[in-house]
Amino acid sequence: MRIFLAGIMQGSLTEAAVHQQDYREHLKQLLEAHLPEAEIYDPRADHTNSIEYDDATGREVFFRHNLFCREVDVLLAFLPEASMGTAIEMWEAHQHGAAVVTVSPMRHNWAVKFLSHALYATVDELETALQSGELRRQVEAIVGPPNH
Image (cartoon, rainbow, N blue to C red; front, top):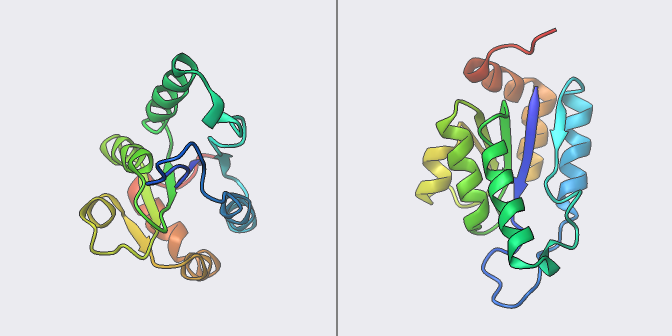
């Protein structure tokens, strides 16, 4: 099972800055504990200084990550607020058959609501779904059981 860890980076910030990214490690730990067979790709891991990239490098990384979302089994999106990049990643994953799992309080936002196969308001709700096996069942209903 290949999982793309999507989530807010720049969001609506108007300056050259990035939102706090500590959520990524916590989500990876939860996924590793409850879906140990998963291969987790975190686009931020190899691009911690992406805010400093020149336009050509930034463009290449942006489009490569969006294309990669077409090839994953699951996209886990963390959206405490709107993120245009994450919305594109969600769209690509959804359109190409991946299960889109979202952690966001924005349950009325159409992009969040209609692109998510599973929507949790908080990380705690996601953790409960992982612990109970609910999330695994939902994902497998969309993409099938993992290949062994």
